[in-house]
Image (tube, rainbow, N blue to C red; front, side, top):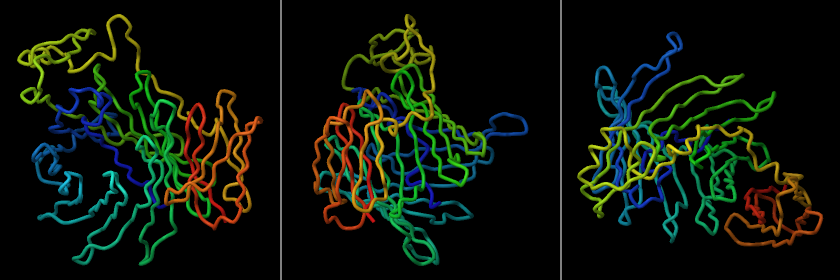
Length: 390
């Protein structure tokens, strides 16, 4: 298995559930404390401290130091282009001096969306190829739906792999999967949400001779205002999950930059608006900034959705890879297929097929070249996947 693409597990507080609130952009993550799971004592032992540094309101670098000795361990530097978009991300580890490890070089399209990411590794005193992610596809909501990836291995490029994203009718990302050109799957990532529509967990698996094998799992914990306060990452075993690390985030609200006189506060289960100068006093009493997700009148426990909450139950595509045609069959009674669009990987629409009454659609190859194609299934819910013609 080549490995999960962009499997970044630490999500900063700026990207938590309250992102659409007008006060969200005034939070800033300052640091995080990372714990390692001690299987002998069944406890979390503090391991390292992560420090976030900023320049002009943007992260300039993230420094990781040893919790006990305060010795430097790792560093990530961020550089931006003239449009203030991330240009390069460079990782280092410390061994007496800072040693380069990898760097990501990002490219954007005319709408400032990521179009390509080149990942390079430092070897023999020079940057060399490691991975390329390109041919990014977006839907009308500017959501990433597809990208291709190819790895540099043994002095040559491996077979292309396509990573597809799937969203529910509310626009939440629910799954990603990756296939090679020959139809073999590399991995899947499933995203589950709690009753407040906040991401509660993400987990990944890869196929093996006995079925799906667990790879990694991340559980997220929020405060009553819907902001991430910690996350636990586990590694997969043959029968379940083994705790690995726990990360606790620390942030502050930049009240001096907040343009309004009053700030929404969740205090004792109710949302109130307080003066900016009083925010600190309320936080000291256990309040959080923002509207309450849990109220004193209708408190609900955090729940975990079924791990196999899956788009496959709505429809199936077969055969895939295909030779002369692909069929799309409706599986769920509450899923209505209205029409299907087939795109090439340059985003050009090359097929449009209306749904027949029986809910099954056939897409004939009709002279299409061998390769991968992007398939969008439109109905009361929209799904995106891809098919391969041999």
